[in-house]
Image (cartoon, rainbow, N blue to C red; front, side, top):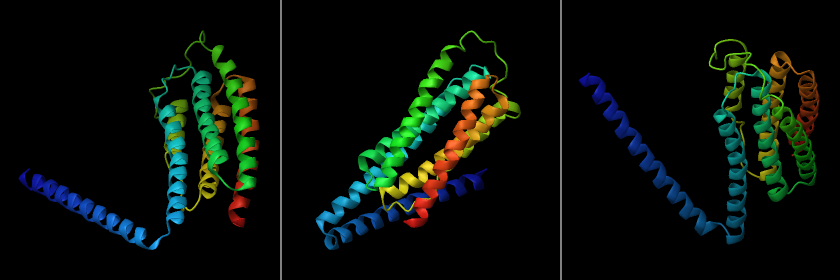
Length: 225
């Protein structure tokens, strides 16, 4: 026990020292940059980092809301509620691109995605109103099998962030929207497998097709830039 405690104290000391060294190095780099980088470039870089941060904040906010959803144990309701928050994440990221991005093609895509996702959010809202009197049809606490496991797997996949070089809002938007759509396709396939409502399954199929087209277009943009 003493040996284990000593190891923990040593590790804590090491991490504290590492953090101090990293902070010192970061401050030194900032000072060096301030003496060699023109004010206009520094402002542009700071603006890009802030906007990229907004995109990441959009994604994190969406994941937090999905994770915080209270499951009712009604498959269609829980899947629809999760999908709604996921769509709202795409809308927020699209708005960030429209406000802060520079590439005309990506701005056009962002507007298209925003409009499509908002339309489906409106559809989902109407669906959710009709599920209040439904009986429970699965156990949301069972994350080891069935729908509970599928939704947990989707959430874990959502938490894996894409690699981004952070050089521009445009590049970050493309990378994050591809990831968002890939996660959306997983969710849509879960809907097709476990949902009861035929129209909901049809929406999921259309979503898969639309997301695949968007991903191809975004990947093409990435290859050209």
